[in-house]
Length: 190
View (cartoon, rainbow, N blue to C red):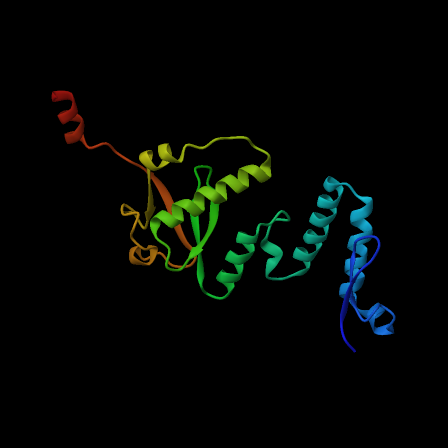
C-alpha cells in the first residue's frame, strides 16, 4: 500500500491510503487534525488562539515536568526547562527588592553577561504577562547595582558563573554601588 497525499476540495490535506481503511479512522493524529480543521474554519483568530492556549494549559497541567510553566509558555522556556532536566543548564535565584525571587535558567557555562541578558528577558516576559507597560532602564540598574554571590561582586561580565562558584539553585542579590571618595574628590578639583 502506497501512502498518498491528496488535497481535498476544502483545501485540507489528507494523509493515508485514501481514507477508506478502518485503521485510518482509528488514528488519533488524523482525528486531532480533523478537529483542528473543523475548529479553525469556524473560529476567528482570537478565538482560535484562546482555544489553543486552553488546550496547551491542560497539556501542561497534566505533565509532571512541564507543570511549572506558564500557560503562555515560549519555546525558549520549554527548551530551558528541558536543558535543566538534562543537567545542561542551572537555575539561579535572584532576590528582588520586595523579598521575592526571580528564577532564571541559564546554561551551565554561562557568563555574567549572559545571566544579565536572561534576567532582562525574564523580567520583560513577566511584565508582558502581567499586562504592565513599564519600561525598565537596565543601563541605570547595572550602573547603580552589583549582582552579588556570597558577598562577592560579579564585576567581570566575561567571567563564567562557575568561576564565581555559582551552581544550580544558587541565590544572588543586588548590592547598591558606592561611589569612590577619591574619584569624587578628583572630579571636584578639576
